[in-house]
Image (cartoon, rainbow, N blue to C red; front, top):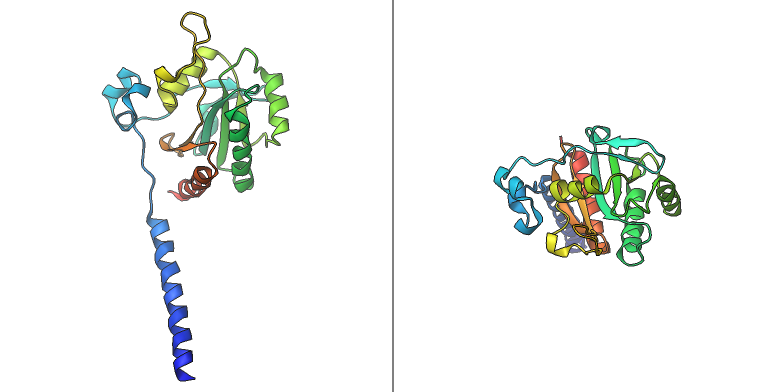
Length: 221
């Protein structure tokens, strides 16, 4: 009887120690900070490669699904995820935004978290179309913003701030100098506008990891 009690106590102590140790490791874990020198050079503007470190997301101003102008100032002290998509996409975008709905659900009570979905097809994705699309995905207007505006500025932000596309991956639309971004990247950004992670938005396992990492950033001082 004594031996059984000893074994039970030993097991309980062992399990408790295991969870305590892993919990402590999780709390000590920190995410990398991505700078131009950490990204594939093909995806980075040569001028930014010379800067190397200290990169932050640049200034922008686009309209959301309600016609409100959203700028980087609206993200002051916020953690956010950014993606590029278009509403008529029938391949990866529906999968990505189904995953993004899971992300929204995970943080529905978090005031310091936002989701930014930038269109790559502003000609068709005007404010009215973005509002319709956001409704289809049960988007919370206070958390999840579907952004549209000038194409050149949308693409400049994608390439010079988020580094979501290599020039060779652009899909030519047939017009001279025009292209079309089509990427499955989710980009995680911290309260200081620094990139802290890239995730495959079509992969549930990677999105699960992103949800864990969002919690880490929200807890960072």
